[in-house]
Length: 268
Image 1 (tube, rainbow, N blue to C red):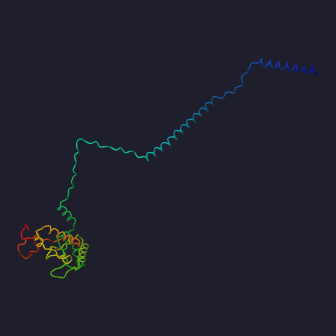
Image 2: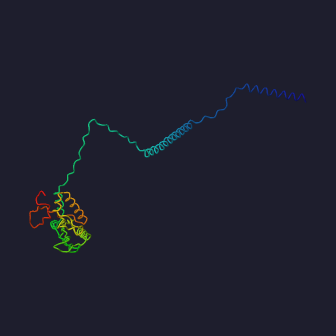
Image 3: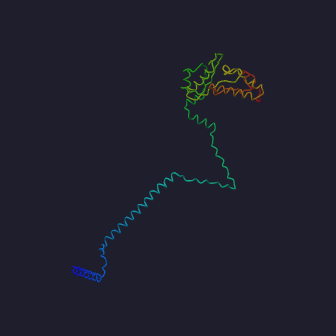
């Protein structure tokens, strides 16, 4: 058994030795290479990659534009443009001051003519007439001259030819003047005689006032002015807008009582 085992071992050793020699004697072959890819597939992949890269760049660019524009728009609305203050440079020569052009004022005559031109013929006639009123209060009898005839002037009497006092109170006197104005078709001139002294229409309501002769005797024109101002305030408060006084006559004797005039010479 020993001899057989040695012989078998010897044969296997010889066999392995021969195999190693043959293997070493053969030249070294390079590893197998994968088959080459077709050229058209490489081109397609290159185009696809380039297209994806272009799309990605466009998305990034457009996204930045849409983000920046609203931000700028909001910043423009929120922040007003700064106002640059300018400092005037003083001139060595003063600028001339231009005087305002005066607005031409219509004369009194032209204003009267314009007013009359807008009146009807009946109203124009009514401007020339004055209605005497002596009554306790407004009645329907006054409507015809004021509304149909359109008379524009009234003179109030509270005592006439020795008759009783009408109206008896200051409030009734004032109410009568306001009622006349309210019922007239034209703006009324409501007048009375408030001279002072013996011709004193307001005396029953306010008390007596000095006559022109008495005022002149003081030698102080301010006395006459103050009395005239007081009379005007009382008449306006009672609805009267015209005083048929004072007399501008110079006393030379005659039927007119001297107390109704300021003097006997034009200088007085």
